[in-house]
Amino acid sequence: MVVRESFENSLQELQRKMMEMGELTVASLDKSFTALKNQDIELALRVIEEDNEVDDLEDEINQLAIWLIVKEQPVARDLRKIIGAIKISSNIERIADFGVNIAKSTIKIGKTNSQIDLTNLEAMKDISVNMLHKSLEAFLTEKIALAKEVGDMDDEVDQYSDDNYKHLTNYLSSHIEQTNQVAQLLFVNRYLERTADHITNIAESAAYLIKGRMYDLNT
Amino acid sequence: MVVRESFENSLQELQRKMMEMGELTVASLDKSFTALKNQDIELALRVIEEDNEVDDLEDEINQLAIWLIVKEQPVARDLRKIIGAIKISSNIERIADFGVNIAKSTIKIGKTNSQIDLTNLEAMKDISVNMLHKSLEAFLTEKIALAKEVGDMDDEVDQYSDDNYKHLTNYLSSHIEQTNQVAQLLFVNRYLERTADHITNIAESAAYLIKGRMYDLNT
Image (tube, rainbow over all chains, first blue to last red):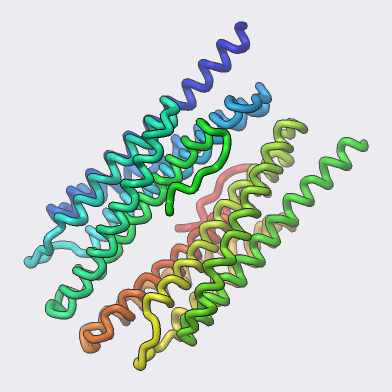
């Protein structure tokens, strides 16, 4: 009974670290987008610096997970929880990298007089943040309905991404002097689309934990 | 002794699967680039279809690795080899995704009369393929010199990437009717730069196996 209790404590520690990674990554996306909107180079640099906290947490999660597997030899749902934590932290790490990428694009754009409307990109970012909260909650509370909602929201982000691509390349043809800025915004559009894909992977890990088999929510 | 022998066999099976993933991924990069050069939509579609073989291999490697850790409770170098296989297969899977991305860009470009010179992008692809072979060899033969060479080659790819970005955005200003094609080539340039980054991660996993501590080869 004591062994089981200590195992439960370790699992909770694993989930706590996962949630912390999630919160830092939401902050990274929010800050990098604020930097992009305000052409705030200082803030962009801070996002890049702070990314190592997320990387460190991923290492800690991997180490704790491997240690738990070796020590406790868990099976079934317990093992799926641990494997889930490894997979989810790897996806969160990649999402935080997209925050860094947006910060780097912000730096490459620098200070420009002409600012392009970022409303649609911001909508994608907001949906993604919402998706990330929902997918982690799906994993923690084991609610399959939440995981499925994430899949639907990913379709919405894909639609925005297609529209933005057309809009930005079209804008470019009449604002050729802004090539650098538009090229960077095309990258940001791509980063946000990929962000939503990785969040969908997290929802799939939640579905795997709950149902014990893999789902493809990215259809 | 029998236990040790069967453990060695399982480790070799793990490495064999890793090498197979590597070869499929080299084929994915080569084929997707040929498709891009020849505007060969059929071939691009085949690259996308074949990607699930790489994904399946990654799943097999993860399962075998976890099973080995649970069953054999390896320590030190043996454990590093298994963790290395998990990390490397995750990086190879991402590289194969870039092959898929290049194939998707090929489809988005479609058939165009004006073809842009792809020599520099092809050079990046060739260096990356070379890097991938070298990084996997570094892991298998435990030669630290090979891992360091990979780090140097990554600098070369980064230089190409910066040059290509300038060249392509500059080209765009005088060929605005080719916006879609140039935008896709900017993405391809980015995919190849990221490909080289992930191969550098593989070299870092090799260095970790050999030296027992992490190196940052991406400086």
